[in-house]
Figure 1: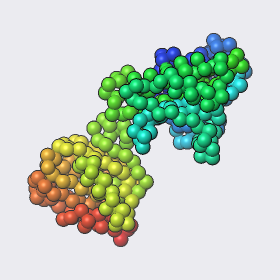
Figure 2 (figure 1 turned 90 degrees about the vertical axis):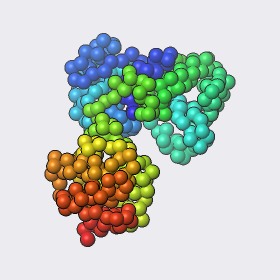
Figure 3 (figure 1 turned 45 degrees about the vertical axis):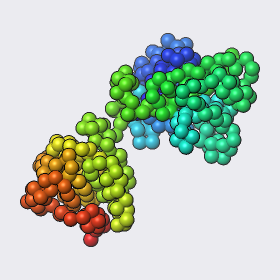
Length: 378
Ligand code: GDP
Ligand code: MN
């Protein structure tokens, strides 16, 4: 789960990281009011869950409260990379002498978190990583020991920070690590961390991604979730406890078990098709869960055929068949479906579906071939 900039920065500030004074507004007149409060000179920042807002025109400086209102009106009407802007952050403007990058993520290959810093921070950091990766300095964090002082000092030295800023930099690095660890984050990033004209360090931007599988330990973070800007299908899937990931292909997949779902996607590929999604309905899926899953699959307009691959163990095939029929009663669709059912109560399940005139298959290969042929219009 991604947090908005304002949420990330508020969280960072609880770990001692200095941030600008700011307020969040959802209508332009509020922005004007907050700009007055903050002394007139502010930056208006679109709160959307994508990077590159600056380059897209979603970050603008205002010199007066009136200008703040005008810019807020404009930004609140924008879409950035397909996402509508519903809120703007009104931050007190800062005069910048240097932009630094500081971030932590998990390095799977190294099997530990990595902290990265660069003197070339700001909106072009992706380009820096691509063209001159040596400008990004890394230290690996032992998860049991945590970030050590010497590591943070190494980073401060490597990015040529003036000596007077080593101490505050180390405090910010320690705060970022604490925020990352305590909240089960998979990313915590400050870009830019700026040196102001008064020679202070300040986190101007903040980005945090929290591990969804750890959210049960952080109900206060779960409450920050912005349903408004999330994909409907993913919100719905979470509600029903389904693992759903939308992909680009044309064959919708409904499978019980993550491994079987992966194998199903592979077989679709093998037969010359492309899966539209990954979907694991889990063990013991009830009819209403199956119905929800089918609604989600069919909400994707690119889907030209649906392939059901159910291996009945704990999950009973007749129960799944009833779920499919329930869903078909609710959602009107012309999308053809191919079903492969094996295992517990498979015969009963197949009988129910045959009555509904759905194509059934004996083997997974046969099912995948049928689904691909249908999707290609054969
Ligand atoms: P992003 O483009 O989504 O990463 O948004 P950022 O919050 O990082 O802002 C993009 C850029 O806007 C920063 O790199 C800064 O150069 C600039 N910026 C943001 N806030 C201020 C500010 O208060 N004053 C000034 N002068 N520039 C700012
Ligand atoms: Mn940024």
